[in-house]
Image (cartoon, rainbow, N blue to C red):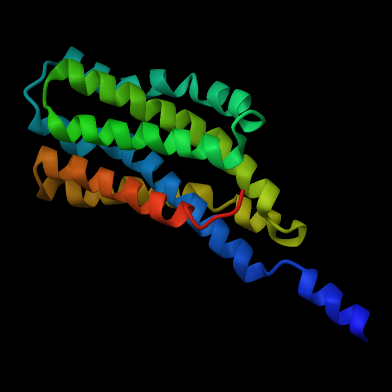
Length: 187
C-alpha cells in the first residue's frame, strides 16, 4: 500500500503540465503580436509603398536565424535560457519601436522581433514536448497556434483604436507578462 502511494505522489500532475504550457505559450502571443502589428500600424506611419512592404516583411527575414539560435542554445544555455533569449528579442523590439518612429529604427526592431518569432516557432514546441506528459502531449503541443492567433487578434482589435506608441507598449506589455509567468516554470 505504501509503495503504491509513493508512486502516485511521484507522478506529475496534469494540472501542472497545463499551467507550464500556458505560461510558455504566452510567448506565442508575442509572436502573433509581431506578425499582426503591421496591419493597424502602417496606416499611421507616413511611408511609401516600398517602405511599407519592407516594414511588413522584415520580421520574416529576422525569423530565419531564430531556429539556429534555438538549435545551438538548447544544449549550451538550456531550454529555459534559450526561451529567455527569445523573450529578450521581443522585449528589445517593442522597446525600440515604442521609443522611435524613425524608419531605420523600425527596420531594426522588426528584424529583432523576427528573430523572436523564428526562435519561438521552433523552440517553444520543443520545450512543450519535453515537459508534457505523454498522454496529453498532442493536446498541449497544439495550443501554440491558438496563442499566436490571440496575439494577432489583440493587435487587430486594439491597433486601430490607439496610437503607434501605445500599440508598441501593448506589445511590450504582452512580452512582459510572459517574463513574469515564465520565471516560475521549471528547466
